[in-house]
Structures are given as C-alpha cells and as structure tokens.
Amino acid sequence: MAKQSASKTDDLKRRQEAPLITPTDLKPKATRDIAGGMNAILADVFALYLKTKNFHWHMSGPHFRDYHLLLDEQADKLYAMTDPIAERIRKVGGATLRSIGQIARMQRVKDNDAEYVDPLDMLAELREDNKMLAARLREVHDVCDVHRDIATASLIENWIDETERRTWFLFEAGRRG
Image (cartoon, rainbow, N blue to C red; front, top):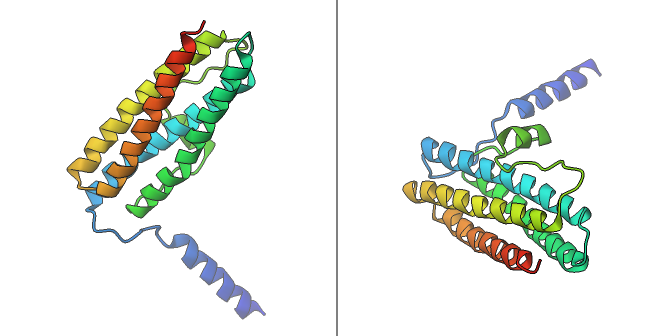
C-alpha cells in the first residue's frame, strides 16, 4: 500500500514538473515575443469584454434596447476571441494567462467602476478602447511578420476587421444622441 502511494506521488510530481512546451519550428525568441504580445492582447480582450458587459448591464435611457443589444453582441464577439488567442499562444510554444490577477496586471484597457456612466459616454469609451485594441493587434501582427508566424498574423487580421467593425458601430450608434 505504501509503495503504491509513493508511486502515485512520484507520478504526480513528474506530471507537475513537466514543462508545457509545444513543439514548434519557431525559435525561442519568436515564441517569447509572440506569446508575450498575444498574452497582452488576451488580457485586453478579457478586460474589454467585461467592460462591455458592465456597460450592457448598466445601460439606460431612450435608446436602451438598441444599445443594450449592440453591447451584448459586441461582448459575445470579444469573448469568442479569447479561446483562439489562448490556443494560438500554446500552439507557438508559449504559456497563456492563468488568473484574473494576471489579467489585471497585464491589461491596458482601463476599467470603469463608476456608479453611473451616461450612455453616450459608454459608447465613446468603448469606441476608443476598440480603436486602441486594433492598434495593438497591428503591433503584434508586425511581430508575427518579423518571425514569419503566418498563422497568428492571419487570425489577427480577422480580429482587426472585427474590432474595426465594433469601433464603427459604436461611432454610428453614438451619433444618434
């Protein structure tokens, strides 16, 4: 019995110490640069997702229904980005985010904990956050180009398009006043 328990303990220890290294033809510097950039994007996307849901939940005013539905749709699109981003980080040999605390340390999207935000201010703030996300996606795309990571660059191109669409819709919705 003691021998079986020691064997299980040894097996568990070996699994815990096994590195999460995914085989890739990318050089270690490429893995580090791409995973670092994509983890920052992932933290921003999670932060923007939660901010979008926050504004969705706290929307009010004469255009409530339109804005509420718009933000719900946009939040869904943001959340849908998270798993492909994290999986891409793993595919290139990197480790991805592990906690809300790590997201908080890495995010560049500013939180908004205000008790009340005017609906047009919500739309404007999210518009600017999405513009900033598009710019950061372009920066990571450049890193991917340097390291010839075509697959990550291809995904980023689609996410830039989606982000620009969100920016456009937020701009147009905010013009309604």
